[in-house]
Image 1: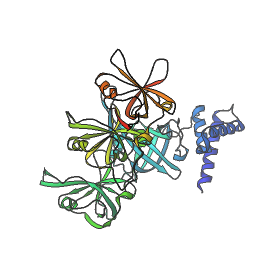
Image 2: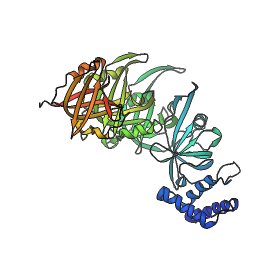
Image 3: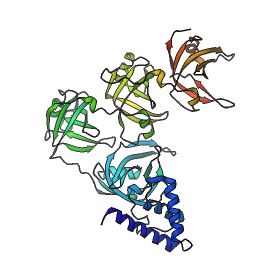
Image 4: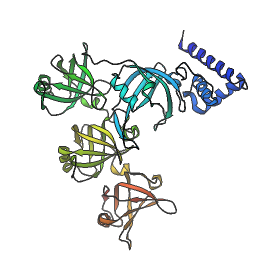
Length: 483
């Protein structure tokens, strides 16, 4: 039986159930409701999906023996469905993230990309459901069934499935942790330093590396003799791995482990530029850390903070912007030494940064095995600072990391000690205000000079409108010295 015929039979069964429960409704009226619903959602909503949504809205007890809606194809999922069931094959599993609940306890969240023959959908597993998934070996290729779950509209505008109970998840076919008899070929992107450790069996060595497997970036862990071998490998080598083991790391992501029973062979070299996948910053911010958490970013430096001591060690922050947005890069310990080599406006390529949700929002943490390249000559340069600037009329209250450029038309010190700088661009005027220790930085601006002000915060002023605040993380650069 073809998929189209199966879909038509399912639709007819839904119609029969709705009409049997709602005798006040005729088939013609129901068909009009379907047409209205599909017109509202567009071509992405199938006839079967529209019927599911109408059944839910009409309160029709369209339930199976598990008190959930009969299985809905992924392609028919739309926001607003409740108590549905669906199933599919896991294409990708993100990093397990932890967060603080309102009661002070820890919550857990796991992102999964699920697919069937009709499409794919983001699935968010919460708390016990996330723990159950990992404990049962959920991974790429696993077959799972979801019952009694709901759908919502995600930040990207696409439908998401949310799983709040462990009972709603059934892992039908977990991905087992077994040695692979087949082989895979990967491109070595970067590696960490060789480390020594003392375990139950005595001294050992371990080296972590990151490779591109043709689809995404993966972590590979080399042990003992294989770690010694990996320590000699160069970026761009094409490696053939055989007899590796697939395990789940502490972040929840799958990784390859290479031990004495594994084989590693260098079979060539490749241009790593083709393997490095640069992520738009806006995509990282919208992910909220739910999607796979290791990224490569490329943009302009718009803020640099000095190194400071924290409980976790030395820390510094660099704010990076591209044409889609901006994000903070957090550097720790030895990586903070890199800050002295960076200047405002530099083009920065960062490979292997990890997305993490913090109180101030989502940041990218630069790990010890991350790679940082200043003004790389092998990539087209990112947009200039001036071209990243927003027009004053486009700025909304509450925006962070705002960049503006223009000509200084006034520098005025208030009685309160605050300083207000007026900047004009294409006939639009906007004010930039600073107070405290930051006043001295804006006092250096000269009327008539053209400047680019970086990493500002937008706030609403009384009576409407927006003004920009020059914060501790803000800076400015002179575009020219014309009066």
